[in-house]
Length: 500
Image 1 (cartoon, rainbow, N blue to C red):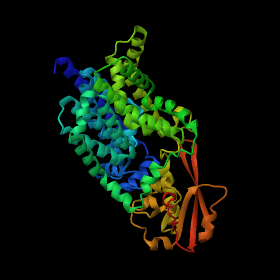
Image 2 (cartoon, one colour; image 1 turned 120 degrees about the vertical axis):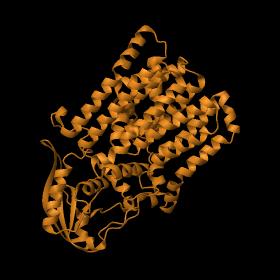
Image 3 (cartoon, rainbow, N blue to C red; image 1 turned 90 degrees about the horizontal axis):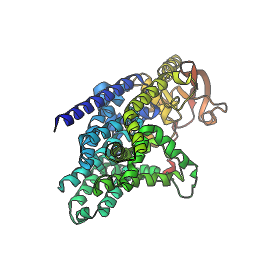
Image 4 (cartoon, rainbow, N blue to C red; image 1 turned 90 degrees about the vertical axis):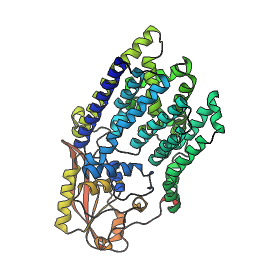
């Protein structure tokens, strides 16, 4: 490695370390989201699968809380640190597929400044480990291409297996790999080799705990996720959301570079055929599915996580390799120069806004309900009411409120979601003695009340109305009901709709 390349590697490492440190600070000061609180509850009861997703997110959170405790930082610690091996995988993938330290460094930095990576590794969801695993799928496939050694297919299998343990979206990697091998003549002999099939068996073996868990639970998780978009539910309005949300999540300048790169790979023949086709198949196979899905149901912006590794490689190729005409060259140079500062500013602004509401003048925004600002103070008020009234358990109507209550109430407090018991099938059943006494029911204040509770309990009394606030903004008002005299089983044990 020459002096210039060594300097690029050193500077890239310093930039990525600084970005990871920034995320760690943000993680420590930002209250957890309701999804994170829910997955944190999973992590306290590890299993081979869960109602909503495979188990990797629970493993990641459990590892972090073993180091930093049941805190906001502990929940997020390992997810954020996984950005370091992710960055290495992206750097090496770009170096192999397109050559040169500059395009490799650009790829690693561009991925880290996207909101999908910066916020997506800070806010721990199944997409965080999926993004990391997807980076290694790309890296190990690049090693197959570089070395021609069959043993690298076993590493591909490990990466795909880890991706499958993160989210079911990873199943599309199999199709992408098959298309890649079939589309590049020099790669077709791999179809006659045992190595790709052995890699597939490795992936299947890693995924097998999820299959076994589903088999034991009426295939409920598969039915829930694979049945999201139904052909009869044709609602093309959702497709209009795809590009605007991806411009935001990729950040505008990275999005422009990525789009230019995908165009260049196809029409300018940027890079070798096998490299170009690998990027295109890893990107378009999943994107085509989500476009189809959006014709029937909403596609959340973070679901595109597995396409970001090939997307940033295309962006780096656009900025460093393609011979553009002068006007287009100026656009590429502008994006390349300002993409990282823009992404960092967007990340910092989002964290400040989520925690304070300053940037919107304390008005509502997209973060206000999902981030648990104000929950620590709200939980203190709920605990005071629980203790004052002698309630032995706190009930909630949804998984988000249940997760927040469990995280912010004193440890050991009985907290139970009254319905949708399939979500908690991996957890021990609550002590019947705790459900036999006085209970608190915590829900957003509703004008129509809770008629089902009136049927289930002899006495339902609203004892308080408590607010969750961000600065002067009231986010939600919660009604606190005291429940007495249960007439039957407190918990609604109706089977989930997927198994009816």
